[in-house]
Image (tube, rainbow, N blue to C red):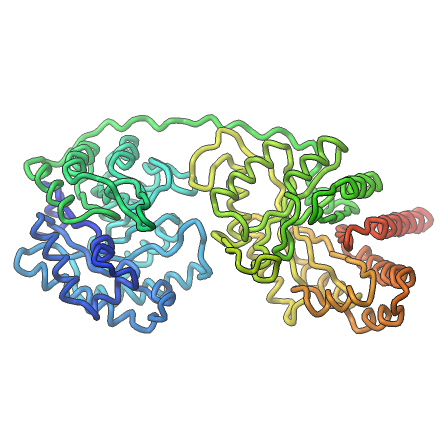
Amino acid sequence: MGLLERLKTHVLTADGAIGTVLYGYGLEYCHEEMNVQRPELIEKIHREYIAAGADIIQTNTYGANAIKLARYGLESRVQQFNEAAITIAKRAAADGGQFVLGTIGGIRGIRKSDATLDEILATIEEQASVLLAGNPDGLLLETYYDFEELTATLKMLREKTNLPIIAQVSMHEPGVLQNGMSLNNALHELEALGADIVGVNCRLGPHHTILAFEGVELPNKAFMSAYPNASLLDLEDGRVVYESEADYFGRAAVELRDQGVRLIGGCCGTTPKHIAAAKKYLEELSPVKEKHAKPEKIEIVREAEPPKYEPLHEKVKRERSVIVELDTPRHLEIDGFLEGAKQLYDAGADVVMMADNSLASPRISNIAMGALLKSTHGVRPLTHITCRDRNLIGLQSHLMGLNALGIHDVLAVTGDPTKVGDFPGATSVYDVSSMELIQLIKQLNEGVSFSGKPLRKKANFSVAAAFNPNVRVLERAVTRLEKKIEHGADYFISQPVYTKEKIVEIYEATKHLQAPIYIGIMPVTSYKSAEFLHHEVPGIKLSEDALARMKVCGEDKERAKLEGIAIAKELVEVAAQYFNGIYLITPFLRYDVTLELMKYIEQLDEQKKGVSIHG
């Protein structure tokens, strides 16, 4: 009798974690490599789960794909590890007739990873082909946080095999996926796409897993599965531990069965003791065939207040718009900064932009200075948000704080690595890239947190993305812009450009894009600063003409200042012909220089109006 036939009349018990047991043996490296290095140990673990009463065991192949193995330099051994794994599992199950599932783990978390969806599917197809060649009783897709990845994988595998496929999502919050989709809707969609068994695993312990299933209606044809963690995880002497008594896990298995689940196993923290307890409690129970699911709780999500200002990406499509950057101080004296920001805003800047610890060097918090400027001087701030300094918890908290302060203009950037700044030994976080951060900010605009939990109210962020046109192959940079647009970028702000030819080249390469671009102009104030920018600051290159003109100024500071302004004006004049958006970067708090350029932009626009009026 096949697996699906058994599930029609029985509640079956699956095995628990393999990684947890290996971790207990002190094996913290690549667990999939143990299929070759320690096959006798993997078989021992399988047999212990079978002895505990597992009707189903899974291969030790959760991370046995090229993308995950690459972190260990083992990407060339996909076939070897998967072949060994299914051979070991089938040998262990031969005497008792347990079902063997070929396990395939999800790759994406909140971070989409550097691999594209096509690359993910290619590597999973490679792994699945090896597993299927070993004649398993089905495939288990587990620990999928990204629903797009799971559905794409399921569609691909459904075309490759008629064997049973179990598709399991992972949740950060009970009953909701990280994209805000309800578990009920997700499981029914997986059923419609061809999954024979749909369910959940990992992240949540028994209590929250039961809560999640309370709102799930029984599928039409598919069966349901649950592989909860032993408990919520804890840290003890730097090691991950799970505090859970086996008997508690067994009693929870009964409650899962009461929610209509027919296949119950364990994930992180579970051991053969947990599975033995589940088997004891489930052994005499029949499947639940009718269930009244709790109605889905409708969270009322309030609309965001109408923006006080027109979003920049809308204004710049229609008329001239100027962003000025003024970095917050690296010291505690702020009067000069506040005065400069006020003067720039009063002179006609749409926003005053503040970087987020640029070049990985600490400055006064831009959220604090933005709030101060807004409340004391009525200045509209635009704040950078870098992925470098905050994990996902800090990023969401930071953004929620900005929204509460009424600061809705943000620029999402990956951030310079810490090794280039004042504290090269500090840790760079990078939980997400700038593209994923953009997508998550737009998720907040839908009233959904990073974990998928409703936020009761929508945020109202206008999201800019960075654009570095100072590269050898501009087309590649434009391709990145297109990807950022796909992730939700509303408009772009470029690195400073120092040649007229580059401005025209940017226009030709980007004129097909719907998202507008602000062209960056940063005047140089001395030959030394010009050389520093050209040779040491990533993403900035001056023209040979500009360097030569600044060099002639020598040590004459006033002459160098005037020449730097003259060079910037020439660039502004060209940029203004092709782009409505101009981004002026204030050098070293010299806002008098930026004010001069703002006056010049105004003059150019007045001249243009005059020409238009007089034909």
